[in-house]
Structure formats: C-alpha cells, structure tokens
Length: 132
Image 1: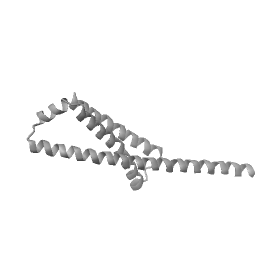
Image 2 (image 1 turned 60 degrees about the vertical axis):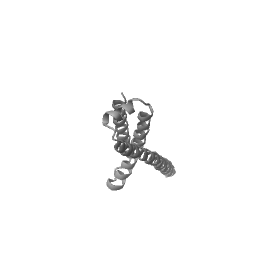
Image 3 (image 1 turned 90 degrees about the vertical axis):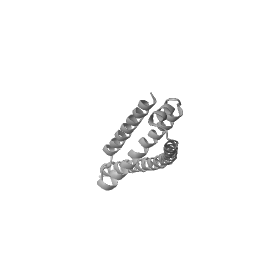
Image 4 (image 1 turned 90 degrees about the horizontal axis):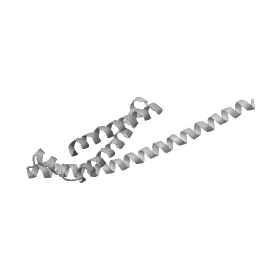
C-alpha cells in the first residue's frame, strides 16, 4: 500500500512541476506578446507616416522602390516589423485557439511555432524581393 502512495505522490509532484512550468511558459509568452505589440505599434506608426508622406509627395512606386534599394535602413526596419509580427501573431492565435476551441498542449504549441516560422519566412522573403 505504501508503494502505491509513493508512486501516486511522485505522480502528483510531477504534475505540479508540469503545471509550474506551464504557468512560467504562459507568463513568458504573455510578456513576449506585449513586448512585440510595443514594437509593432511603433512600426505601424512609422509605416503609416511613410505612406502618408509618399502619397502627399506624389512619389511613384518606382521612386519608392528606388529609395528602398538605396538604403539598408528600410529593409532593416521592415525586417524588425516582420519579426515582431512573426512573434506576436502566433502567440495570439495560440491563445484564441485554446480559449475558443480547447486546442491546447504540445500540438497547439507546435502549430503556433509553425505559423510563426511561416510568417517569418514569407515576410523576410518579401523584404528580400523588394530590397534585391
């Protein structure tokens, strides 16, 4: 009987350790999403201000692309934008999936990572296509 209690106690301790790890992971993801939201907000402001400037100045698409090609700053700026979006969106989708559908656990985490990697790859490829 004591052996059964010992294994039950070990299982309970293991479950508690798993719960603490999950809470730490969720807290870290919450913080990472808030930090990426801050970066995204700044990037959106710069992006919209640039669009307004380009429209008011009557710049053509060719003129805008010429400016992008002439400086490393714009591709670097948009790379930061893409990385922030690739971090922010999957964390939010993971939370929505867990809340609305009950989709949780390792599979949900891997799906969120896959979405993030896809966003990162597609976004950086778009920047490479514009900057090259």
